[in-house]
Image 1 (cartoon, rainbow, N blue to C red):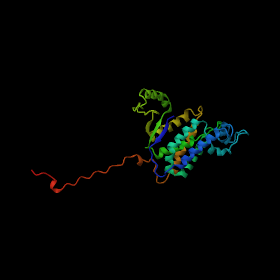
Image 2 (image 1 turned 180 degrees about the vertical axis):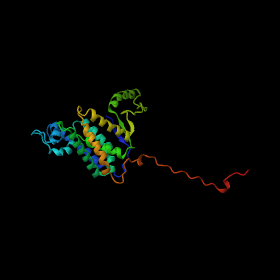
Image 3 (image 1 turned 90 degrees about the vertical axis):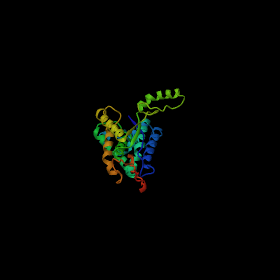
Image 4 (image 1 turned 60 degrees about the horizontal axis):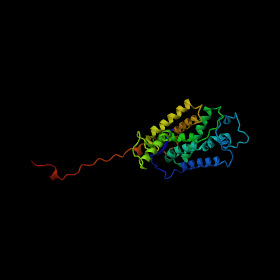
Length: 283
């Protein structure tokens, strides 16, 4: 999967995206608490707070020793649990890059409600798409999918700097060898337009997120049944984000905003005034 590093969309209304920071902090805190094993087996704990379609439809029950909230509340609690450090890190990177601007366009409270709404709608979409599944679903991916969709609607012309981890993994050793051969001086040249050491690239939000959305749709259509990733939940989050963004955004903040990424027009220089005696030459 292609990963974002940062974007150039400025914050206009908020000095600090406190809701986005709080969401990241809660996700990290929950992960550390669960995987510290202070409360028992991490997988057992996560199962109690995860979305399990058959349990939500009343066709199955958790074992007596598994503690969790009432089944409908797992549509929310599942958003704050992650199955691995890589799962957490990739989700929080997407949320860090795109969430602050979406919060800026909506306001902190509206953004928080938007985030949770996208997660709940995506969870409902998932359980109706896989009603017989007993596989626990955890992770913030579905809500973050809605955030990505919102960013696409709000800042399609923003520039995203991203990288492709497999390419970075392959090319990084060659960059280290080149660095060593050059006596510690970092090479400045790019390779096929990619900037080392991560071999990052620049793309518009329309292209970056648009391609990411297409990938989610393809995976949901072709590989949803065999993958550990709940692609249908991602699709549900995307659809929720596209539908809810116009409702939750600030009234004054336009969709498809272009003003922050267009160069201001320079005023035309007025012709310099010339004294009458210098308007021409006599022959």
